[in-house]
Amino acid sequence: MEDFLKRKIEIGDSVVLIHPYYKRLLLARVTKFTAKGNDCYVAWGPNTWDEKRQRGDQLVKVDGPDLTMYLLKK
Image (cartoon, rainbow, N blue to C red):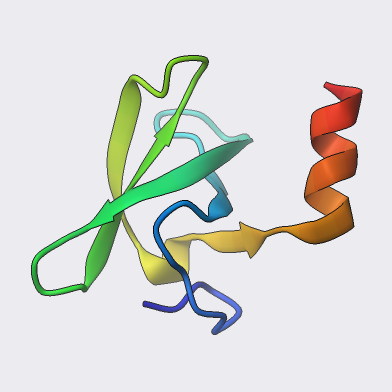
């Protein structure tokens, strides 16, 4: 599966999406793919209890120094 920028998404990758029911960005982690591989499930929250089904073009994969700095500042 590919994200909005056509980068490959794997289980465990960190992604950014628009929060459901709100107009803000949210950092989440890919937890699983659907059987056909068209969609994936992403989880967020302190215990990753919120989970939502998303298409790949609704996500942007983040990694490297940008993700590290965001997590350190939080």
